[in-house]
Image (cartoon, rainbow over all chains, first blue to last red; front, side):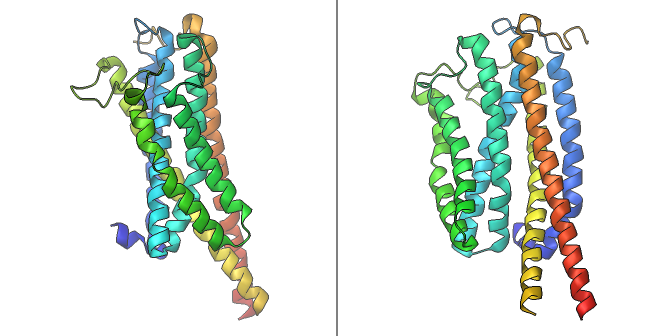
Length: 240
Length: 55
């Protein structure tokens, strides 16, 4: 499937219907997840702040997924010099930065009533997610700062590949170091620590955020393909 | 079923701004994505129309 979609014409035909369908799926899943989440009873320890979990955790999941996509697309672009992979990498970075920003802000708003602090510099989970945010911004800044688009892409893609090392650091930070951030509670050995009344809306919202990310990414890749087509047409017109 | 809906008690000052930040984040992503797509699509259509007229 992926090799078939590597052809820009086939990708444009596929994404034309796939993006709106994913958007509809996302709206349904997020709506259902948040409806159940907002109706969930207060947690015995965290009270009503548990409602922040249904928007914070999915944003953090998708932020990491976005960087994995950025790294994968950058690898394909660097190794196989594939233009659509480069377009995909460029398209995913702003989305990743936005999801990471949402995760940081909502996490801070959750941390203040629970830990008594908006931010803790010594906390490995918080700092590693901030590094993720800076990596997305660094990728975008590097691409924008080099006039030669191909050279800018190469430099930014190398940064994305190096930045992949941050993903396991984020994931295992709550195990490797003492942190204020709670440990793994969904995907852990022995099953989830969450009661179904919290787990079900969290998983629905997580699936919805992932579908929304997919829809937005496809739409942005389409936009990037059009940008390149416009640049190419403008160049041809200027040379004619 | 809806007894807890929109109930955030003493934590309302943290819960609703968090939802607001998420709405803003999604709004920016959706608006920026659609605006970019529309803008480049129109530019391509215009350039292709110009090219067709010239040939």
